[in-house]
Image 1 (cartoon, rainbow, N blue to C red):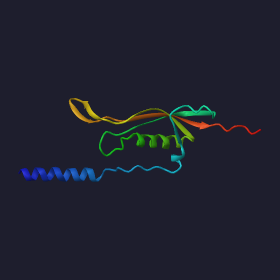
Image 2: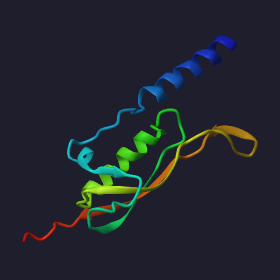
Image 3: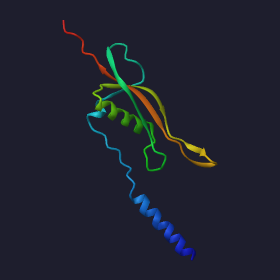
Image 4: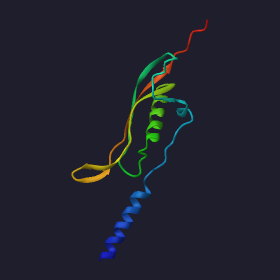
Amino acid sequence: MKFKAMFASLLLTLVFTGCAKTTVVTSDQASKVQVLYTVPSQQPYEELGLVSTQTGQTIFHDRSNEGMLIKLQEKAYKMGADAIIVRSVDESTWGFVGDNSTGYTKGKATAVAIKFKQSPRS
């Protein structure tokens, strides 16, 4: 009986983990969106809007800072941005998540998508 329970548990684990996607797809165009941590002082720009992302909580999600920045770049690229100014990045961490259980917290990141203004030619 104990063997059947262990086998069933193993089978269920294989079924559910075999379906998980762990790849991150990044377009070459989105990677051209610059990542800035301060306001550009030498180049005029216009703000296009706020972009944000949130990670999942399982081991199958990319919960890294880099992964969240890539998602912000992709969203900003779709808005026509040249760069993002990062406001905050809170990486997912392991710890207590409520009702005395442990797990990963959700990572969160926000940035302002900007488009550089072209300087008028003299």
